[in-house]
Image 1: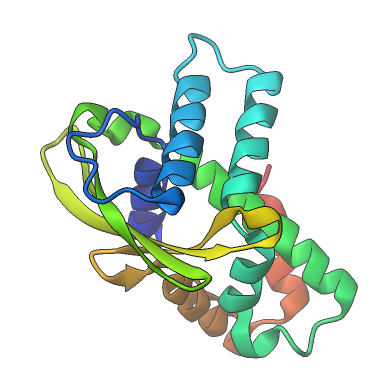
Image 2 (image 1 turned 30 degrees about the vertical axis):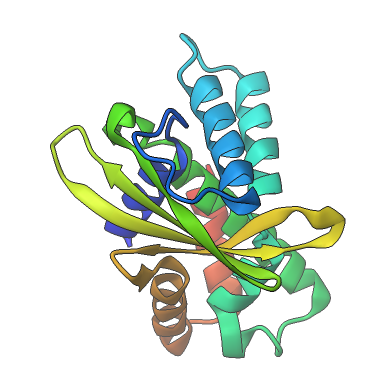
Amino acid sequence: MSRCLIVIAVVLALVAGAVSDGCAGEPTDQLRTAIEQVYRITQSSTPTRASDNTSAEILDQMFDWSRMARAALRRHWETRTPEERAEFTTLFAGLFRRAYVSRIHLVDASKFQYLGDRIDGERATVKTKVSTKRGSALDVDYAMRLGDGQRWRVDDVLVERISLLDNYREQFDAFLARQSFDALLQKLRGAGK
């Protein structure tokens, strides 16, 4: 899970000064704008509560937390109350945001590439290549969906064709096979402190 969290943090915190723009369409443009904004904010000299809140707002527009939380819980979602679903979604979004923003320094932003997007109705995939400062290069695809207001939002990230949501789902399934949903919420609450 930590490798996936590192990769997602790295991928999302990149400069839009891409080496290659491929066939960029609206999904790529919206993703690039959000990533640029988050990168600028997080690279400021001293992070503040205001900059943290602004980053969170940008990420909240970029990601479809409700869809992602539901997918991460899959079969466990239907048995949860509306209150449990809402709390899980909030905690999941917070976990994802923190992991994402905390690892920006691992990216070699000068080598980040947007390789284009593929649009199929209300679904799109934005392909990127991410380079770390240690010299690794990773293929990262953003699965996006066109939502209300004609905004493309990320609902999964695939790193080297491995879905981060599948990774979360497997971990949550394993945890819930041993412990209660309340214990999972408690663990996620603790991760936010």
